[in-house]
Structure formats: C-alpha cells, structure tokens
Image (cartoon, rainbow, N blue to C red):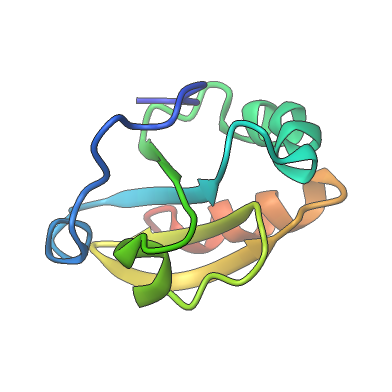
Length: 109
C-alpha cells in the first residue's frame, strides 16, 4: 500500500495499530485542516513507490481515542511505526527531508 488520499471511515483501535507488522505511517488530521491539505503533496511524494510502507490516514478530533493515545496535538501528525512501535514522528512537515528521514528509520535494514 502506498499513499492513501482519504481518511478511513472507521479508524483502527490502538490495539490494532500496536499489532501492525512492518513499516506503517499513521497520519492524523482532518479533511478541512489547511495544514493537512498543504502537507498532502509532500506526504504523497514521500510515499510514492513505497509499497513496503502502509499508510493509514485517520481523521482526528475531539473524542477520538486513537489520536489521544498517541498524544497528537497538531495536525497533521505522522507517526512512523515499525512492527507497531513508534520510531519517528513528524508534525506539520514543511519539506521532504523530515519525511524521508523518518521513512528511512522504519525501513528494513
């Protein structure tokens, strides 16, 4: 799976996320967030051709437990996981470098 343009209709539970295998990017945000919209070209470019990385796009907001469990405060927040464990985090990316560095950190050695 590569870049996912739409938010999931039903977000996974924290338990589901913790059990994910391999490299995963969980993106927290909303469809109406200007920062989220502005970051999409960067995120899409970073994930292009990365079939080895699952991209899970979760709509966050008040009362959303998954975002709270990760301590999300600003959108977009991208949590980079390897086998369900957080390795890196990028908040409101402004350029490609932080995303590339985080992807390298979760890629198999």
